[in-house]
Image 1 (cartoon, rainbow over the protein chains, first blue to last red):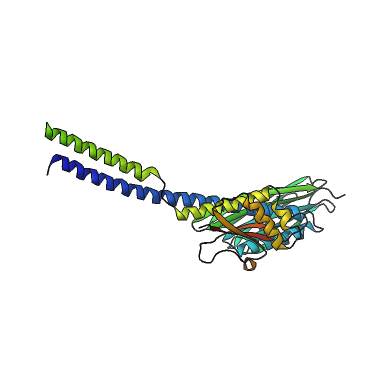
Image 2: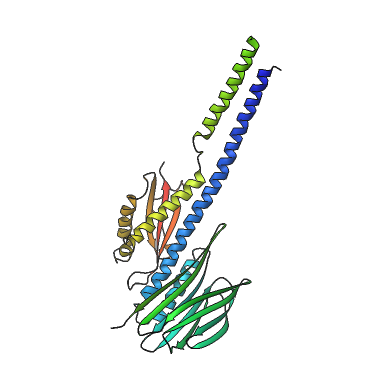
Length: 204
Length: 137
């Protein structure tokens, strides 16, 4: 074989190599880009859902019985979402009623698993330990003696200990606060977001 | 002299073939149908999200008007935002089972995007604004 012909053969082999690399790279890029776009979409969906939970707390404060209305709507909305997608939700909602001086704490478990909870409050100092089955909620009323109360929820979930804290303002206005922990599971994307929303208002 | 000249010509030819192949191979992105669907989904959701953030979506859905009229109004607003390469239909429904598409083609891949609304002002009704999107031929 002549030297020139060897160059030609080597050139053809290099060409084939480039084409193969090109195809491999494009497949890899497509998978990566698709994953990135899909997770971007899940991110948008979770933001949409969190926003709607905030909306529920806001709209709930306009009802004649803010605590019960909000709790009902939070439960109903979560069930509505769970019918539609794989979603795990934990919410903690508190309402301070300035006319009675009491505040109520609600916890809703929609994590698809039982959780064992401990809830601590600073005003009054109190601690409660209880189990919450999936789709179950806990409600307890407290009498406030100072201007705010820290509520700490500790719970065990699938071998992990989680702790969340909200502060209820127990001053001279009505106050409502919602904490939402939302996880969306879609294909092989798991996205979790937490958000707190509060509102203070006076009754004329 | 002639042999050396021939070798040089062959090497030059090979090198130019490789360069031309590289240019052709990497000049344009390959078609990515799977990615295209994800992009359409994202764009459709972003359009609904924008309508909500700009304060147009919620007042329309909770206006109390018949939903088919509201759907047409939303479609008009979305048309200005989405590429002309896609066609779409909007359906507002309370439950997933209530959602129906009338105009989407049967023999094409139809992408479904849901945007949730939980309430507006004192109204607590849950709605799902569903978009059916498909590519124009």
